[in-house]
Length: 474
Ligand code: GLU
Image (cartoon, rainbow, N blue to C red; front, side):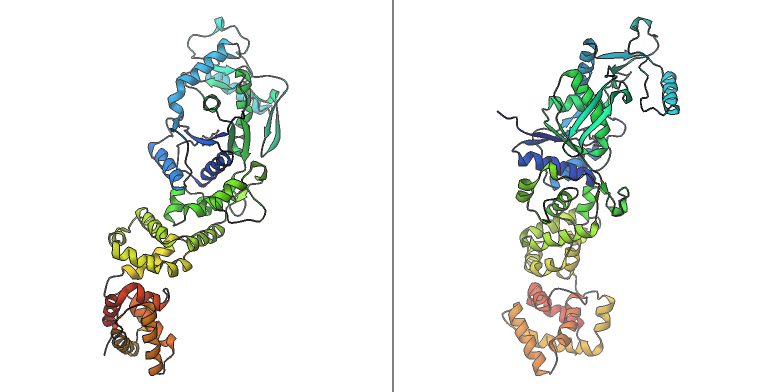
């Protein structure tokens, strides 16, 4: 029997689910799906000072919104502290770890000496072989791993390749602090082992930790999971990703009107490629994803590309679900209460009807909302400056005539209003455009909108005629 794949996403709840974290989750999710395995979720809340409940909520919400579901219960690392201690004690009992009574001053002196001598190994092993009977009784000892002092620690990383550390450069790491709290390094290893994780996929800022973690696996006689350290996401200029360049929480992308499917598609292509293919359905992504095609160079975040991709997803989304997403984004935007209050069966139906035209023009749901403003505008319409300029006294007269012409249309639709307007234009020797622009200004308060016949159709007979009346003079 082959072991099934178990991956995990292990965020620290010290902030929102940022875009890099979301990509790590996606890669873990895809890898598990591809191999018929499962992705687990572990919240690494051992840093009690910096972990917050709000961050946990944001992470869970973000993952749900991205539809990156995890299997089973969420594991909270802090709740497993007793088990972490147990492993440290076991290593101690087996002689693979030892108590270290070095004082803060002694440790500081060691560090300084190491730095002065240009060594990365900071702890000099002073308590490694010392008799505990000589221990001072005013120091609470830490427990340190008796790490190998010679030879190499090697990780065969699926993305980075073979990575080798000289053990003489790695000091005896702390497993348990003086206050009895496990270190992050110990907790990660014990949890991954106990959770049956077969594949660790995470940011390459953790590569150095992998060496220390491997030493703990070795000491426990446990098998190291397959390791993949994926390059971080950088800004478009190659520098560290800044807020301006997209280092935002997933909730910010949601509020900016990105579709989860578009964001997933964008993220999968950040650092991973599959020929020239840019657009992937979820099924295609799962089928094509592999770790071997994850590049080693840092990926560059490109807002314009994300926007284009989002536009593609909006154009291809079905109208009903776009209305749902429209509502969802309203829920996440401050100051949109008024618009939300206007959502009812009638306006929803109008939105569905207008959607084919609206979605052609929108790159984000915010642009979609903006394009749909004419459905929700209150009479008499507030005209923007361009529409105002267009509605000259002369054109207001024209609006009056158009009102009379359209009033005769009994069965109201895009086609019947179009026919009436064409006839009107012909009879008055006017170009259709000369009629359509003032009409648009009167019906929408702006000079850009979906096609004018669509606008008439969506607004319906009564509302269209009333808006025309508002702006007309005889
Ligand atoms: N909690 C770590 C982080 O949020 C990830 C640790 C891991 O994946 O091993 O960066």
